[in-house]
Image 1: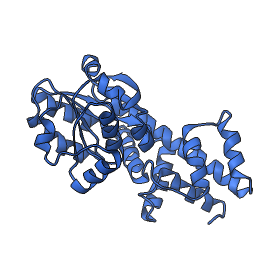
Image 2: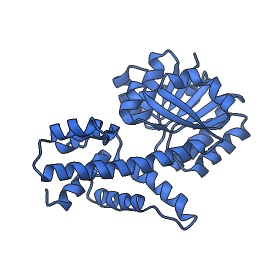
Image 3: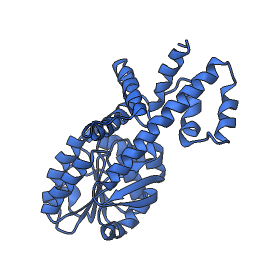
Image 4: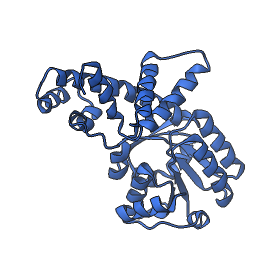
Length: 290
């Protein structure tokens, strides 16, 4: 049992805090926006701490979950002075490799251990405790905090030194973009052929083309429901990080560039807060649909 504080109670952080609460390991939960914190607490049944300083008092482990690089660095500068040397911070956000390394430098200067541990599995995974975590940092530090991480994840993999977690997450996000392209395009084709899409999804998910995205988003996208599990604007942000990594070497990946261009169009049209499956809108339009 590890006394754990969760910082950031958005879609991912709220689910993480809830599972730690159920396992008896949640010491405190805090969010910069109090209203969001109260909504998360009311939905999941845990209590929030109104002040960051108080949230740090009993923490052996701090888990951060924020949306962007600048948010992580802001919180890192605020948290580091509040922790005693030897405490551990695990960041589950998706940020650049450079930002993860900078956070590590800030915490190391305060004697605090740091792991970059981005996660995959979306809002459902966070709420169900079935996230997959890819971790960069010292293996010995990871082993110290495994009881808490096992309460929020179904699999925790040590990927290597600091930054390896974020590099692995970049692989995941590029792959997710390709799956999104393939599934939305294929299902748009099925709709264009006037097929029974429930049967199409049943048969394709049972064969070689089966995948998580098809299972969890296929029916909803065919019914034009795009409630966010993973917001398009966040995936767009993650893919921009991948693009910037490649640009430093003068490189590009065609599917990555295509997805970013598609996402730009959808964000401009006002769909940035919908699930990434809203890409279906563009695929249907290509085939003459609404």
